[in-house]
Length: 135
Image (cartoon, rainbow, N blue to C red; front, side, top):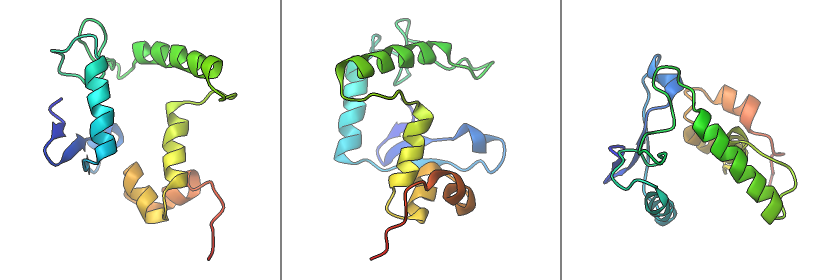
């Protein structure tokens, strides 16, 4: 929760930690504040230092292996509910959500910024999937 600050949500992408060290700050919007409030409210342990924690208050990522088996299990249960209770017919992953954010962004520069890429080339090649609209 140390990453939730007055100016926004501070993030250190794991891919940049050992290279550029680039950090990102997602400024607060009413929607982000509401989403974080819901997450805080839903935690099984209110005193945990993690926004997403298990019932023991621990985070989902193992610091030594950088794996998150508990999170994967939770995502599988969530996806089963989504498929059973909504009109969604095809399962998706967190990586698909990331790709959608990059593809739906109003510009290549905005997509690059949201995804935290240093260079727009990878953003354009991998994440800009929708046809470009020309007015």
